[in-house]
Length: 272
Picture 1 (tube, rainbow, N blue to C red):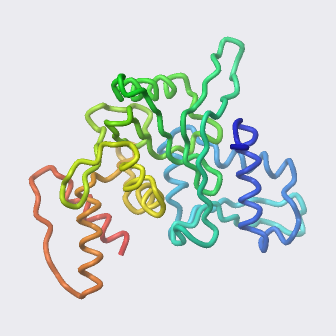
Picture 2 (picture 1 turned 90 degrees about the horizontal axis):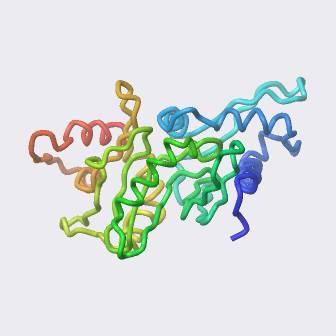
Picture 3 (picture 1 turned 135 degrees about the vertical axis):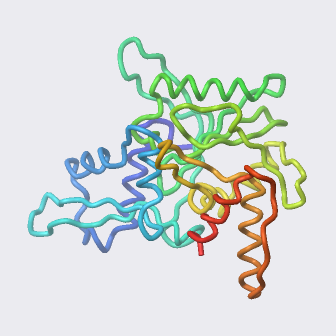
């Protein structure tokens, strides 16, 4: 409840970043100049560029920083550790009604409905509509925000959007141009649709699942410069493969042409 503005989000991010890198910072607080440099490094021109950094190397999102004290030299700061989900340095927060700063005199003030933060960075954005409205109105609103370049600054790190009117809930990867056809609903392991927003939150937006979805179940398309989030059946297949591998069992994935078996296989290999 204490986070309502972009400036407060930045302060919160730096507090978490400093706490998670105490040994590297060696009890020397980040200067305002160093914070400005870090801000520029975690502010991205596109969601895809943000995802490249977010994915990181060896499961860690790190940034390098030349400290103002030249004797210290260059340090590596851990932003998010995808190998340590739901524990250790991972901090998960929910904020709502964040007031966006006006970019210019003609700009309209906006407020975001609900945002999920990982280590202080906005990663999943949820837009809500009343039950008597279509969730596609939330989808169109997100696309309008993208056109208006609202997702910049700290909000340029968004990886996933969720839209809901309470009874119809869907998700989509964060990209500059959203296509309605790519909206995905959620189904459980028995292929039962999960459309109620609270059930969806429990199955998809809880921890560790929310963090896994934007890390272990996300794929970057280098040709299209876009983020791909796997569909529910692909995720259930991967989870089943991992469970079988622990029992040293083999098996096969059977599905129709065009269902994404190649992406499923790629993600299995990568995660293993």
